[in-house]
Image (tube, rainbow, N blue to C red; front, side, top):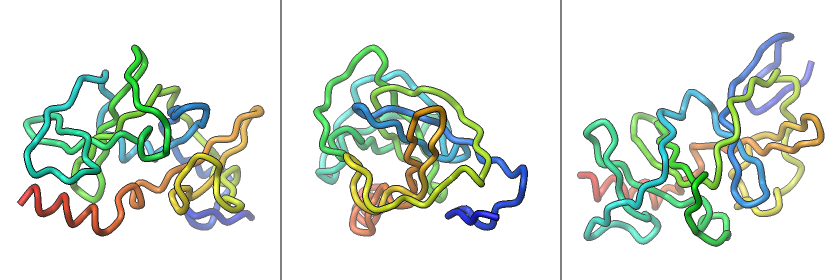
Length: 161
């Protein structure tokens, strides 16, 4: 039986992901970490915010920092009709990420998730926890825990305090 980053696979175990696009790359995040998908709206600026934060949005009465994954992945930023903000729950804290297009919710048998073999072109090293190859598509599963490095987490904690 195949092993994945998600543990020992048992026949019939499924995980669910939200698949989205950044440039030409298809990526996915665990569906249970995606709180909401919103149409893009320009974020508010906040004095003293860390440089990596593109702005702040209000969601459910809470100010949520916004990270543009396009710029983080070295792609040009630019909003289109399909641009979305995905609000994530990362260990009880909210983070908004800007993506080019949300494609689908996808169920995947854990046996179909392979370990990444080296770095994935266009994705910062260490962010990919698995890869799903399906119907001629390759979808890189991102580790949401690695979207921010420890220094960035600390900087956000100080701004929120």
